[in-house]
Length: 264
Image (cartoon, rainbow, N blue to C red):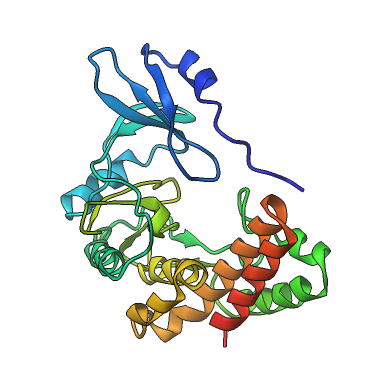
């Protein structure tokens, strides 16, 4: 199975034009990030990804706690280390705070038709995720799911247009919180795009269905019916494909169960 390579932080540091020191791995994540230290002693976070710094400047101007990009040396970026810590668990305070962050993202990209809309990849493979052939080749149940995903993809545009700033991977592992659980930072903006912010709420819904189903009610009624179907199709494809390629058969079953439950 095709896997996304993990970040080799030490190799990346050797290729940067500034002498930064490795300061240990960041917790969590599927691809990897590392703490680094500048010559003046302050710490930052090194990751691999596109330069979305200009979009994050728009986010910060709108009150979204997004990091500044301090150094861009494609494909590596060094970004501001935001305050707070990863939440130990999903709590009502954190979910409500994430909903508020989502509200602040709405309308931030109005008047920016130069930015391409969010791609859904329901008709063909995405760039390293949302791969169709993995579901087609895995088993009868995943083929049945893929048939439904592609049916939805054929009936709707393969983009989700809108004026909102969309994170595209909006779940509690990608936020930092204070001692009360309130969000102090949102990280991992590599997939940031222009679109409909309901997409991020549906992403959060999938995560809570897995980790904290008792909190799903906090999202009830927040996603518009007209976008729910394509959001469901994208997230189902994305999570099942990723589980097939990176995790166990039990994880594949878990995400199939969640997909079927949320798709009713």
